[in-house]
Length: 277
Ligand code: ATR
Image (cartoon, rainbow, N blue to C red):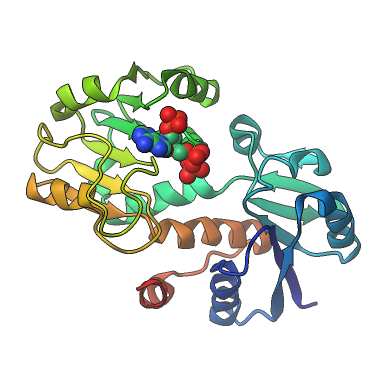
C-alpha cells in the first residue's frame, strides 16, 4: 500500500515538509504521497475527521495547531504530553498518537556537528522561553548536562518552562544581564528568541563579550546564514551551529515514527541548503 502522509496548518504553502518527505520516500524507494491540509481555525475538527476517514498513515502538524490538535488524538507520547504540543501524529491501527520531534530533532542536529558537547560536565544556557524553547529545553533535559540555565525577557515565562523538566536537572532562571555577566561559565548557548532573526539585522539578545573560547553558540533561525549573534560568537572564538538542519532531523524522526525506517540525510542536507539560499 502506498504511504499516505500529510501536513495540517495555516498557512502552509511555503512549508518545506512536502519536499523533505518526498525526498525521503524517493531515497528509500517507498511509494507514497504527502498531502497539504491548509485549514482555517474554524474548520479544524472537520478537517481532522476527513484525515481520519482518509486513513492517512500519519501527518505533521504546524502552526497554529500544535496545541489545538491534542483533544482530537487518542494518545500522546510522554514528551509531547509534557511539552503540550504535537508536530507528528501516527495512525496506530485506527488510534491516533501524537509526538513532538522538534526538540529532539534539534538535539540530533547539534550532536552530528559537535558530539564532544554532550558530557556530564557541560553547562548550557538557553535564551528564550517561547514555543520553540519549550521543546528544546525538554530535549536538553534528556542529555547528561551538568546544568541548563534559562534567560528570557519575561522571567515568568522562563519559570513556566520548568514544568517540562526532569527532577535531576539543575536549572536557574537568569535575567539577560546575569547571563551576560556569567557567560564564561557555559559550553553551549542556544538562542531561540526572535531577536535578530531577520537577515542583516544587527540586533542581538545578549552581548557575547564574556564568551569562553570553543563554546558552541547556536541560533535556531531556519535560513543557513550567520546572524549577527553568530558572527559575534565567531569573533570571540566560539564554534557556531545554524538551525536549518533541525528541519531535516525533526522530519527524519517523524518519518521514523511513521515507517520504522531511518533515512540517511547526507544528500538531503546539501539540497536543503541550496533551496534555502
Ligand atoms: P517561538 O515559537 O519561535 O519560540 P514565541 O513563542 O513567540 O516564538 O517566543 C518568542 C521568544 O522570543 C520569547 O522568548 C520572547 O520573549 P518573552 O517571553 O519575554 O516574550 C522572545 N522575544 C521576542 N521579542 C523579544 C525582544 N524584543 N527582546 C527579547 N526577547 C524577545
